Amino acid sequence: MRQIVAFFVFALLVSGCETTHIVDKTPSPVPVIQQLIDPSNPRQALVIGNREYKKSGHLKNPTNDAVDIGQILHKKMGYSVDIRINLENKAAMEASIDEFVERLSALQDGTEEVVGLFYFAGHGVHQSSRNYMLPTHDDQIQADSDLEEHAIYLDSVVEKMEKTNQ
Image: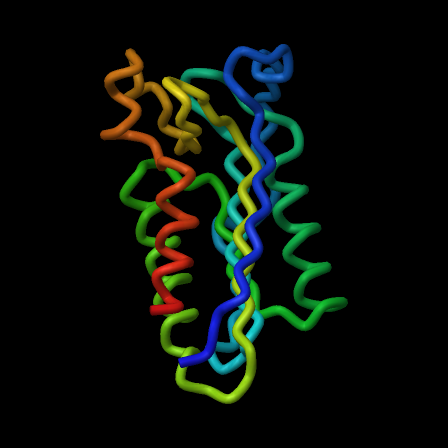
């Protein structure tokens, strides 16, 4: 079985930073999901841009950043790209990540080296030496104890990508 080369890019705005207080009520002009997927391409990317947060306000750039990164990865670097925008809850985020990991796993029997790239732009929280990515329905997170149930632990994404090597 070929070794997967995994790249992990993470653009995180930690909840305590000033940027988390930017409120922009303009609806996002970007489609909810843009897929430029070729499951046979050995270069796979999942790009998530969460902008429209219920509790912590809307961010200005994550959707634009996600679409721009996705387009560059697809057009200039030859990646098959799945762009997800404003994922509302942990289940939606996990489903997107699981689909991405399944595509990576399916490519492991091929002759080419497989490259996986994950990019997230949006709110995140650092708690007890752990980093979490937040879905847009962050109003479900009222206390630190809610993070495991309602947010994505960052290392879990890396672990899932690494397991495709086995």
